[in-house]
Image 1 (cartoon, rainbow, N blue to C red):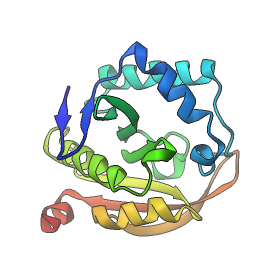
Image 2: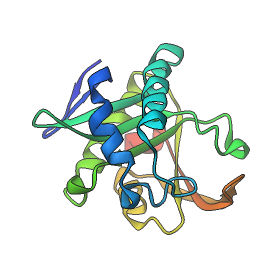
Image 3: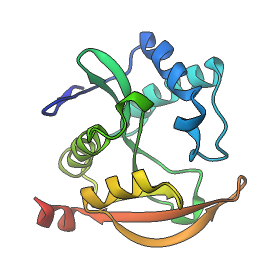
Image 4: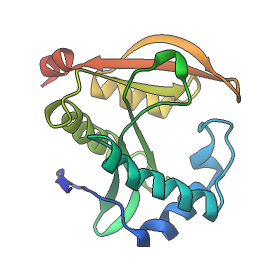
Length: 176
């Protein structure tokens, strides 16, 4: 599946995405607000890549690989937030970009297209997004997408403080 935005290509994952994805997941600053903040090694990243590929087969949605000018710069898309059981059933929109691509509006651009996919093609009525309470960059992306803060909670295990945001298809329609 391929989606295009003004500057980006959102596409299916390929095995040859592993090197770029592993480099991104090994960056402590990229991983700072992800669960316990630990970086991922190549083997963990390979397992994650296979999970992302399977998600599209198991669900009507998944995470898109995001490219800029032929370079994999990260991902954006939809997933089931199993790490936060208290909000299930739910579908989460999320994104992760390699650090050189921060601050250029790419996360918002890619996530906006993933949100559109979720409502228009996957048939979802409500989408959540979860961020570490200190992750201001993600908060700003969520606001630009029209997601509204619902409540704060803690992820079991790492005891990470998070904020849960949400948007409905009806609310998103009013954003357009």
